Image 1 (cartoon, one colour):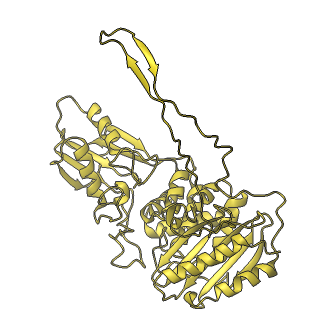
Image 2: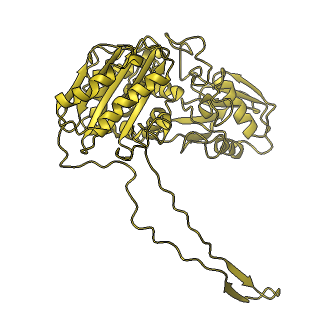
Image 3: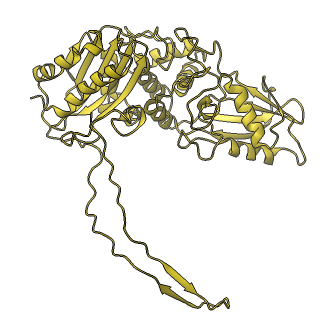
Length: 450
């Protein structure tokens, strides 16, 4: 895969200015210290692969010849399904059982992302509020389904996230002078139903990659900001974070309902939905993807449950013109082993996001991890100088026995392709499967295929 190369410029000198006011507080004089000549760095080189308006279309036969041996790699256990589409022409260049439903793992987040960007306004934000409680010393944190709310400023994981500190400052300013908060209630009723989905394993939540899905959480339900381990009680964690920010870490914290008509004491907003989609895709953030799916359900008048979210995502895709006849979802993140999607659908939504036919979904493309540079592909790439930097972007997917990679790739001739690769029934433990899928994407990047 392509390795995104970022150049750093090192300047070998510093300009020092000395000040001498004679110790009298007067203006004195300013003297220049040692100086250094700056190097001529020239024009910056492009970081990402560019598209050519004259790029020739690959030949389907040449694409098949390049990919067939790689897709037959033993690591893929003869269980791989694939599709490659020429984005500009909208034509399928290669398909291997692409209409057969497979377990997609986290590539299912592509579907949730398209649904979120079409059912919601990409500029919308998710609100978290605090209202007055039933007694003067009680406040209620009302979860708005924004798991990016941060206990640090800025967030260590989610650029643009709202902060608990900001929320607490508003609350303190709104409370009557002299009020000491003794109780924080956390209202998580925006989301309903089970906290984990059908098809999740008992080890999935909490884990290093997922948590129970609730409407109130901080730091993506992480136990420690910026670390991987997730909490089993995101709601009360959020309440304790607010209590600490209010200066009352010993306050009672419990789940409950906000009083009807309660006065709002403070409110903060997440980054826009488009940015949340990018973050969910690049980092393969399961809780964020599930929260977005619940908001799609709410926007479509369905219950904010796993079932409601799955129905809403599928419905939003269908309304956008995606063929969902072979789509069967149980969650919004792809963590469920019962999810079924075809590679053809994955390639379809990627093509629509890339060519603009799925209006408003460009954040799907910008949210794809860049091979060798960031997100879940940061350590997957090569240093082949013949491969254009940034040519391969993708959404990864990994479950036990399931490995997937779907995204976009720029060929050696500058042609943009969408690809979807999903292997079920693998047994290699991860490394061999990822290397095999990476080899396919790298072959597309390095091939003119004419």
